[in-house]
Length: 625
Image 1: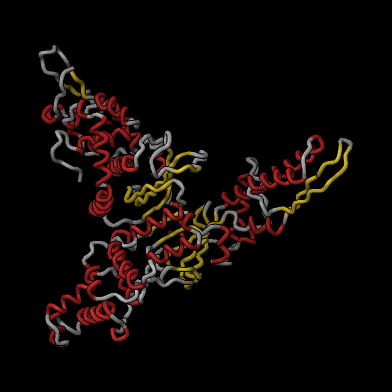
Image 2 (image 1 turned 90 degrees about the horizontal axis):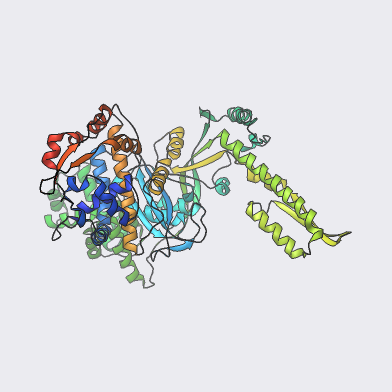
């Protein structure tokens, strides 16, 4: 994909060390130039050290940014070709910050690690069940996670490799508007509902049976308190999967959501061409013709041409309309785009992607409507959703204990405030502001009735604060401790425990982000233009891809291990340069490898790297210095 012409060193030859450096010795691009001569890469890649310079590196980064879309389109196809269809997709959002002002997309905000007022960007990552990066996007720093995920859903909803594959999203996609977007996509999604929205989906979670438990979370009581929660879970008829997982299948239930368009059924429905106009009428007619061939009513398109008194070319022209993406066909037949002529429809069919087809149809609707917005049907719809609840007794104990500890801390703060109040000259408003700020810090706004009364003391007039816990509000907030409600596509063919295990496997993408941030040292970023930042992120995605590939090859061998462990084992393998005299060519010899190292290289299909004869034939000696 990278340019091959003109330059004395191919762009891909520069890119390879940059990716490898991310895995072995991550650092700046200037550090990469100092690192390269300490490796055997100049000999193995025929890369003169002086050619690996700052100017060429930045030119290659620009080239990498230009082919980024093509790269991301190619990767899933290669993964499918080698490993078959994906078992699951995982979507998550992270961020990274800059040393200095950063690029144009950088915005001041708090990072996910809690760094305040940092110049940062967001990164959206989609990977498969093996942790292979499939799609990634760099987004402005202040864009919130739900919108980032919705944008990514929009880029994959029409892709063949994403259809019928479970897509796992974290709780950021659990709010109603985000669930509506997932429903519209018709992807086989799984996400977790936000706690404050659980009641809008179901009242069948047996949370009341746990209301009498008030665990402290203390080390000496922890195991007993977890056991008590387990016993209550069994009594509540939750299905035990293991000691820390109890499941309740709530089946398919209906929830009213506000959609941008009616959800598309997975099964095609019949439409009467006589009730439609323009391209929609011809599309409906084409579907009838196709159905007649599929059911055997007509043997061929030639027979259809004779029956309907049309030319063979006209029948072919009608069948070409069926190349329009299926979901767009349904929307067109419903009238979501208003009147669309057959000429516009034929033009849309020639677009290479469903996204491009959608854009053309919306542009046509804008022109006809004249309002600057596409013609779309919006409104509330009853949507069928698969619901599964699960309970984790340890999470229950920890959540409820933390909440109780927060109450103690608030009580202690109020006692301290009242003790020091006589010695300070504070107004009612000042005291009220301090109390509200403390409650906000503990997420306890609305949990107490606050009373501030004037009192007389020897030291002078002052105010006393009293907080009264709202018992009903407290119980409501603690109602779903330990519970998670999963929302899934109604046609997802999995059992309740399988859906739960799938959702809990989402740490695949979270581990990828941990690798990207720590091992490849994505942060802080030193680039200051959007293209270079995007290229830097792509490098940081290719590095874990390389590591996952190594781990995948080692997994079935006698030496399964992580990529970092593999690098450590192979660290003693060296290509040694023997210099006798300036006029004598350098000689290369390999450090003798251990049996363990040879086994690893054999599993990686790289044993040639430690065979003297093969290495002598393939390396390109560097110039003497």
